[in-house]
Image 1: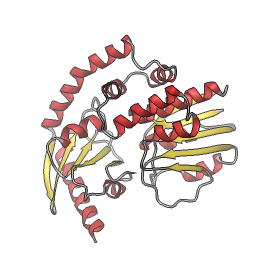
Image 2: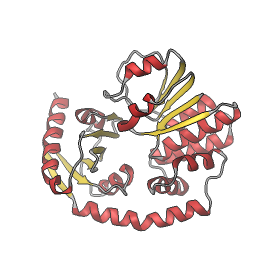
Image 3: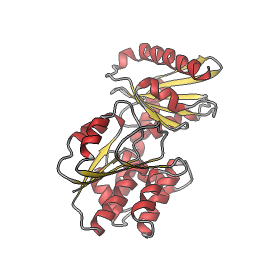
Image 4: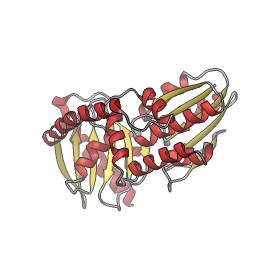
Length: 295
């Protein structure tokens, strides 16, 4: 059995799924997809049984990951972990392919289908979105993913080389109004803090906005540090100031990522009436993280 455990909320992650789905079909392998994020990674690996191969992609290091379970699985599975986030030194019986210069889908493509035209196009779409390049199709696909479109269905379409159709166009068009309402919500629920020499905006986002859409919108306001929070406790970190290492800050919130983009989690549900108090809590913790990192 061929298991794919990869990010399920952006173009890079879905492109990884699609390339690996295509690879499995070429190789006559039965495949199962787990569309995950940092918060539900452990739930996915607990469900894997039997023997075969596991590919983990576009999921970076997080201290809450159950590495003992990974070690157990390695006894019956060949495990390849492909990523482009920052990793500490870690001893695991897996084949790590880590390179910050590429997005995860590019690394997956190079390793599994380096000469396949559809895989190469999927990797280029992922690169455009992950590195914030101009590519209308990549950004429209991201809106489709954010709209809640069935991830497995989208994966199978992309794996066949069907990058756009009427159904995807409809999902994209319907999401535009929802996205605009989400931006209005951000305008209502945010606060700016001065943390040492840095300005920081902290916002509460609706579930209808993804981390990329919410933080890109907030980045336009020009603050050094952007932090977005969702009701399930999920957090997203972005920056306008290259002095700030977001991966270091995210570790204070049970998360990780790259210098330029990271994620974390407060570990609890957030009610809208307590947002102001939570903002203060986050600001104090971030100020401490910045101070410690500057020592």
